[in-house]
Length: 117
Image (cartoon, rainbow, N blue to C red; front, top):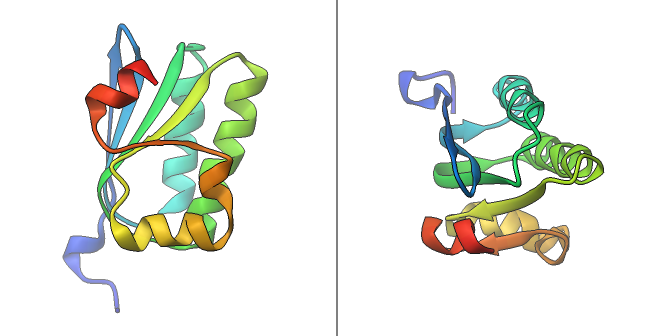
């Protein structure tokens, strides 16, 4: 699990009518979560109706990543933005289920569902 080239985080933010979609690829861990945090907070500055965090391309997320997403959700809701998590792979979903956070988040399977959630 040493630093190989494929563990670089890619983050793409797209402003859509339904909200801001933040598409993430790679592993979210202690090393990459600060970058993710910055990008999520940046997206929230515009107070979109929804912040859709698209995790389809994320195969691994540790507790620092979960903490980052939880922090973004709290901040979002203070500003009136709904946070939706989309496309969780089994490994990532299990992290949310173990911590019981799957009940705290709106989780969708497709980006179409996320836009209307």
